[in-house]
Length: 624
Image (cartoon, rainbow, N blue to C red; front, top):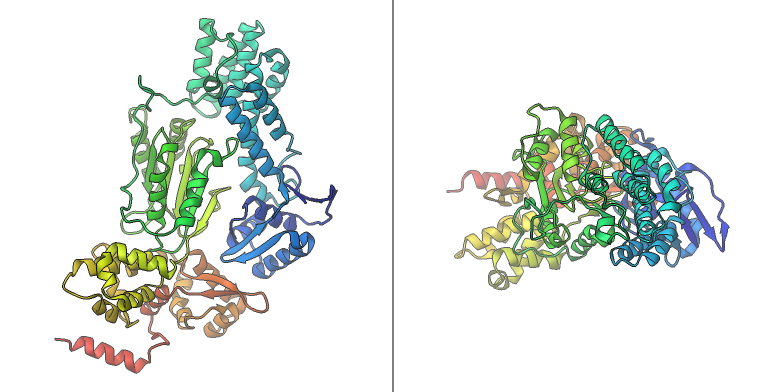
């Protein structure tokens, strides 16, 4: 079986096209294929299908589309429900996008090794995988989200193939093709450099000089920037009479633009990463996925490296991202940038303030305008990071409006984003959705924070603490810190204090670490109507529940209840946990989030009788 997305979305079995129709069905298939066996969330599928105006029956329609795909594709393809979305495995089938990236990567490696014949053959094979505009028969929302990075990858591969042809002395054969490409991509400086090289080698120096000045005018008019280092270097070589020497070495062909000192080190490379967590524990599958996605060979032919880590507050998104960034430093010789996109009180930082901090790390501030013109700051920021092998870590992103100006517009810098929920701005990102830690990893984290000997001395208490922390790394680290800070107090005492659900959140506090405080920003950002029903929904109990149960409890229509539930899921205060027997989604509170919600209202936890809670409060009031 063959899958195609580099053009119209198609499925072919035994060389014949499998017939199925509908832009939305093609969209679901393409989205699952592009995810490469990773989970694509219901929310992202919804955005790719309907944009920002989904129907009220979105869950049922998603279920229907997936069911239809399962019937069409048969048993050779597996589509799994994996909260918060779906994942598809194509088995032994082929995907044109994967073939394109494999051939493009091989061609790039051959080009670097100066095996130009092999490079040209592989790169032409990669380009032959294309059959038109990507996702041509899918929705415009999918095309807008995914097509730009693929067309960029194709353009980069085309540049590499032309570089191989130039190195083989085929400048006269490709001059016409390059002239058309410059007209099609007037802002791509590397293609302009290649045409200047081909013209010069064909004895047309005057045309090459005119081409440079035309490009300089276009860049100034369209982007307000000067030519980059590669284009300027090509122009200088043209004036010095050295541009017609061939073949050119691979590093010169591939360009770069990074300024380096006499020893070849990056000049003033930023190093903004926070310190790594010394006792980082668990998350090995997620860490491996992040490192693989950030590594240069994961991007194929110039594919932008964008990785998104999502999950509720306290799951360790920042710790994982920083740990992965430190592990991958060798891939980013031009430096690492870091920005926390939230202030200490949890409010989102304005993009202009973040941009100024990043620009300060990237070089002198002499040419940075004193005005708060965001567009001008974005242009300068993107000009400074263009062509540089940088890792940009954007922590605690709150939404598309904040994140958009901070993303690069070229494929060389890699971006690692953390946020509580999926962000459609991070188009084509590898998404790593964090779940609570398993009991074994939780115990290991508790031991790392408290000290192995302290935990080993009280295995029963340690197991109880792990259970009360419900796999939340923040809670486990707080518990471990409290045990370590009290060498004369046994873990049993803390286990007994955590056993009471009424006071559990109060106990999960140590210094600046606080589970209740970490959840507050998510709650504060809710719409008032969602905030109002939050405690009542938590009173439904610790088990998964469908929208129908929520509607009955809130005395609302089911569609309205589902809208409120989805808002809580978007804020990472509620999880989508499978589906009921009718295919309707079920929702589930994390145990500590549920206690947080109950603490905001008058409802008592169902697993404690109101009288018991009153007696407990009386004991606290009269405690000596």
